Amino acid sequence: MNEVVTDREFIAAKAEERATEHDLFREFLDKFDGSELDATVHRLNEIITPQIDCTQCGACCKTLMINVTEPEAERLAGTLHQSTDQFKENYIETSLQGQMVINSIPCVFLSGTVCSIYTDRFEECRQFPHLHKDNFKTRYFGTLMHYGRCPIIFNVIEALKTATGFKTTADFSDP
Image (cartoon, rainbow, N blue to C red; front, side, top):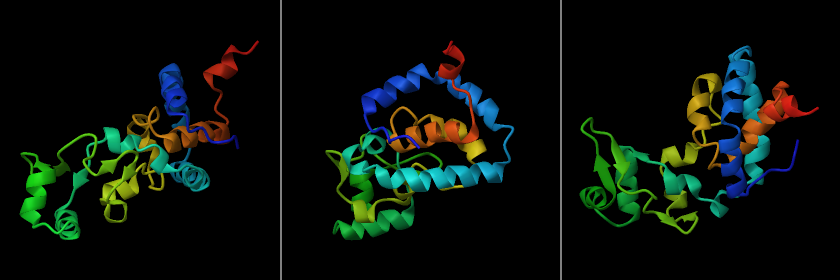
């Protein structure tokens, strides 16, 4: 496996450059058994994630809308020594359907590239980039939306191309 890439400018440039390749890769992945593909993604995620220090990046916190559950709002309100109503007034917006989200992008709890509430962060933050979950084939498009900003996703997708024997567009352009 190649050394992990963490340079976000490089990753963003490659995301633009490889847009067509990713469409071809999605089609290529369709021929794989879903559970076998999940196992490969999980294995690659377990190898790559520990090699990347998310606190040096914070891109997800700078760009994603974070969903919040009622229990999380209550818990964090207590941690911040606020009432739940106060917490919601300060940090939450609620959709017409009742879904709560953090009211700012970047996340108000981001300090530089570090989460100021890391030990109490929301479950959605704990789960990102969701590469440990099953049904990767059905989540590929959503995952790919973050390919250009998340070093973990970038490296797992690139390693997955190698692990599955995918011929990249670079492979086709070689003489």
